[in-house]
Image 1: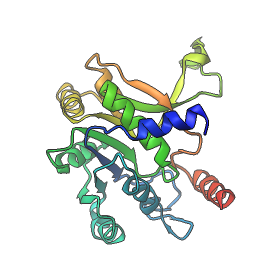
Image 2: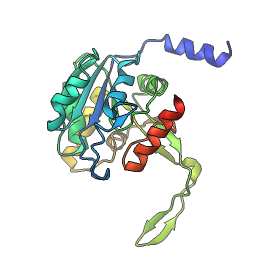
Image 3: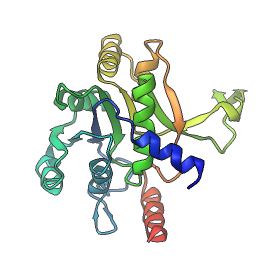
Image 4: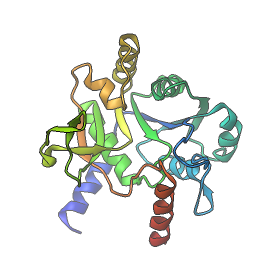
Amino acid sequence: MDLKSISQGLRKGLKVKPCGAVIVAAGTASRMGGIDKVMAPLEGEPMIVRTVRTFQNSDVISEIVIVTRPDLLETVAELCREMDKVRAVVTGGSSRQESVCNGLAALSPKMKLAAVQDGARPLISGELIDRVVRAAHTYGAAAPGIPVKDTVKIVTGGIVERTPDRNTLRAIQTPQVFDVDLLQGALEKAKVDGAEVTDDCSAVERLGMSVRIVDGEERNMKITTPLDLAVAKMLLEEQK
């Protein structure tokens, strides 16, 4: 056994604070061309089931709350009925921020960390969940990120203002994991300020808090368009 394997084994033996997963699947899928991505089939089962199952099987996740649309409450609850970590299936709000808040409110008080996951990232691995939760246990806030491949331009009015150093850029994924009190306070502050944040890290960053970035995974893609869905199916087929 090599040193990396030994290190990983020792790390997994260390206990972390109780962590609840909030899986957000309440969007309208406006860019999916009429496909309901929450229920889109992947290897014979709905996408949301694949996402939830990975968290169900994770040793660092104690409970799960699924946030979805009102018309899918009963369906999602039935699909996940045999997953004993699923504590609740709740209705989302008018924005992603509200949906996350609804999910956090449904976690049990004993949860000290919250892992917020896009329901439309069905290829998430257990290893990535473990890595981010353990980072949040240590730093209070953590998220996975992958290097940006393309050159990024800051553009105003069709004119390039500047070109950031690509080596400093990361595309941020989920799960984004935080101390529960920190995330709730950050989202409430954003609401009071009328600030629209694009992810949960942004809300925490507004408070002046640092977020630890760990290595993400290329496969942990978000299904946003029909092309994304086709790529996900291809990746699963290759994995078989």
